[in-house]
Length: 107
Image 1 (tube, rainbow, N blue to C red):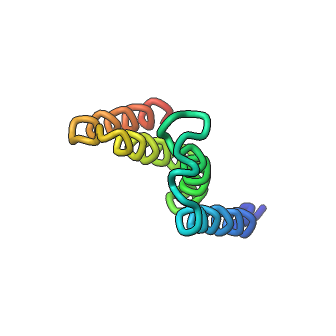
Image 2: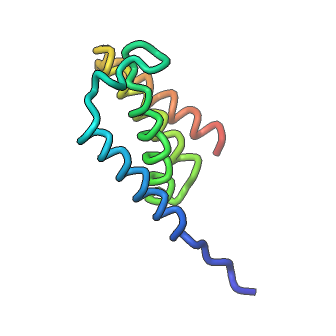
């Protein structure tokens, strides 16, 4: 029996759509309009588009859904910390450590 081949075309179409929407939002939407939606100062619509776009992209690039999810969670946490000006080396090391330990635990 031949191993089944994965069909990446629907995922690639979704990736292009999500990144296009994110780019359009960055280019055409004024940041102050989306700054305080639901959570004050978080730019929630940006992160709601960035997270799935990053997740699907990294899952395809890395060839592993779990690692794509972990890297995307790490990037999103880093961007949120950067938004609140809490981005320093220690926080980056802590995020990386948590992601590596989580990856090893589920491996």
